[in-house]
Image 1 (tube, rainbow, N blue to C red):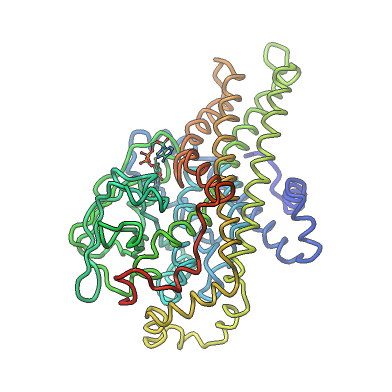
Image 2 (tube, rainbow, N blue to C red; image 1 turned 120 degrees about the vertical axis):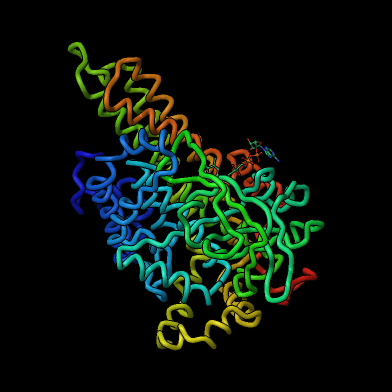
Length: 496
Ligand SMILES: Cc1cc2nc3c(=O)[nH]c(=O)nc-3n(C[C@H](O)[C@H](O)[C@H](O)COP(=O)(O)OP(=O)(O)OC[C@H]3O[C@@H](n4cnc5c(N)ncnc54)[C@H](O)[C@@H]3O)c2cc1C
């Protein structure tokens, strides 16, 4: 909270108390856990210095002026490297994985999820370049992000899956077959021409680079679903409008228009036809645990403001001395802790599957290649070519298996649904107990209540996440098919 102690000793004690599993990991990997704690402390400081003083006012402002862009807050995060957290060290990033990112999201969201979601949606845009093994773009796009951040000039990414009449359907391979799609990618010489709309895209109006999905063959959307890297300066791309939001207002959500937008072959991420299986599934498997953490942070923020309210005397009595309030606090604490363990468990599962590639010896050894070679034209050409992508994907398959990543995907869906429901439950319970008397604490809890709802909707609704958990873990009819990228079974494949 705004007046809490953010010294390293206090933060360390708190993190290790909340996550007993980190105490065990610390015995074997002390520097790794120290890095996590240092990052949480940086976020707590950032919240205290920049976010708490403005969050309520900014939220009110953006209710009326929803196109306002809070660049000052993004710039203030540059020294802490919030935009480079999950970018590999190879290209100047922090090299954090899901565990670090989730811890950062919980801490940020306990203050303001709108601000946090700018960093969260940015990371979501980065993920397909990582899990899609787009090593050529690491040296250009990801390096631009890390270097610009060091100069205090943020470069932001976004991810665009949702279409005006395809939300849930565009996030799951079985449903995609029946989806009513508006986007279309038509093959032309040297690339594809994109037409159609994407909607509700977080950061859509402020991002420089966007990962955009589209079918290349409308008759076979699931098989031809493809991920494209779009630069906002490409001809034919525009921001159609910015939405008015109920919660998480500081992060803009935009509708994007594509009118004969040409995207060159080298901007196809992974291969044509891999955009859903494994592309979208793997990306969401990576991002849903951090969304569980976003929701946990919102619940924690509501709980902390409620606790502060409950401790204050009103008409000579403290609400905290009443049994109903004590029970509510215990209930909130229980749910928050369960949501926390769920996201940490899912993050660890992810880091121990596909995450192993990011920190693997092969990637580390690439640092031995001189920087001028890694940014040279032949190197980029190789890694953007079919052969280069095949090599990277073969390595990914050596490090992990379909079974491991499918389990990580199931845990991620579990954590996302538990987190979203916890955020709604805790913020509602707090509001119910606070009654009608106005207070500063109540304003924060009201904001948390509005911010919470989105965590049940984006990154796949909680209904979809429950179905994903069922299909991948219980019904066993959904496997994350990493190996599939090595089997060119789509007709259009192999040309990029
Ligand atoms: C503020 C905001 C920010 C967002 N940011 C992004 C972003 O950055 N990038 C992006 O690509 N998208 C983003 N989204 C879109 C979000 O992911 C979708 O809203 C979500 O996937 C749901 O899709 P939909 O709104 O079309 O609802 P629908 O898919 O139409 O669903 C409506 C309801 O029906 C239920 N439902 C649908 N199909 C089934 C089924 N088969 N079985 C059971 N229930 C079902 C859903 O769970 C939901 O309750 C954002 C949305 C919002 C509101």
